[in-house]
Image (cartoon, rainbow, N blue to C red; front, side, top):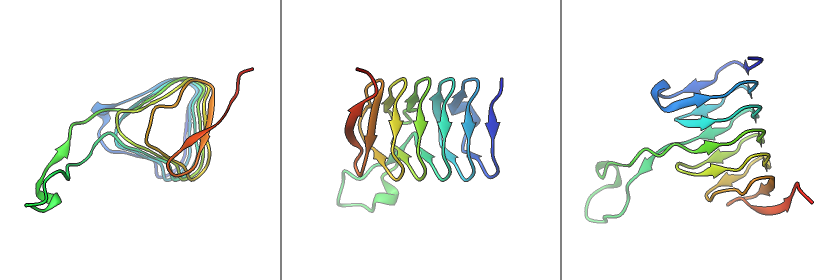
Length: 128
């Protein structure tokens, strides 16, 4: 299917991942879980997360509060994820989008958007 996996790609739990065809996943990528579409490019040092620690209570340490439920991010077709990007759990990265290097994605990204920053913000549309 033309997919390429470079060295040191770490997949946390294969039960929580789906990867489409013709994807290029570069070195040192950490995938905790997710649904990755077709024709997706993932640059080095990207982290795709599907859960987080609970921190609501202040009367007990955070480490003892458990995890927030698993919620796989969805990365739709024809997406380019730049170097050192972090994508948080439960988000949708819309078809044809580009995420600039070093960004932290904390909200859904509409299709054909270019986003960047911490947190990632809309820069411009690839359409029209």
